[in-house]
Length: 113
Length: 107
Image 1 (cartoon, rainbow over the protein chains, first blue to last red):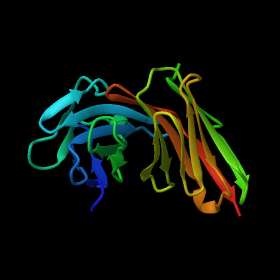
Image 2: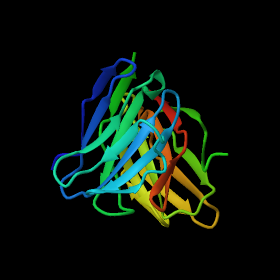
Image 3: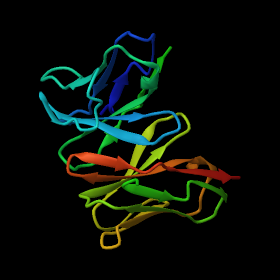
Image 4: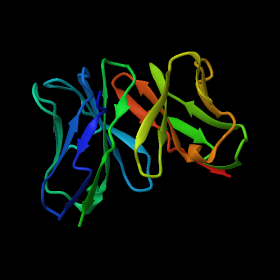
């Protein structure tokens, strides 16, 4: 049973480009969470999704950031027109149900030059 | 003010020592999680608690709902326990994270 998978593991973008981060939850998990860990800071909640629905996006920046979890395929966190301040580790976690144990992916480390 | 406060921020211990990491929170929660983040950055969920106490190997986690406090204990610590330990509380759909306790266990 594969764990939560994220790709790419490392992503380098120039300012103004788009970044697409993918998260494949564990088999049987329909709940996905995205978190951001800025350098020298703790984890921060970004968004909580279930299949085809955004449940809570209160942690997402209002502009440039979007997330989806389609019926088929991985969850995508999309950052448009990246800026240097977007450089961070982005972690995805999945769970079988609401308020159940979350399992974390290895993270995507985004570096914006 | 952070919703989740951890102490200590940094901890150095000799191999074999008993270790305690504390977590206090200020929000109503549905569950509290203890996470371990290794130097390479990967995150592992150690415990999810909503009451009482859980034990897994040398790790023990307790929670006092009335006092809004949880502790993570490591018995017979080992250098491979060196990592950052993060307390996270779930409230509704959201999670709030402590800033982590960096543990170094010296052989």
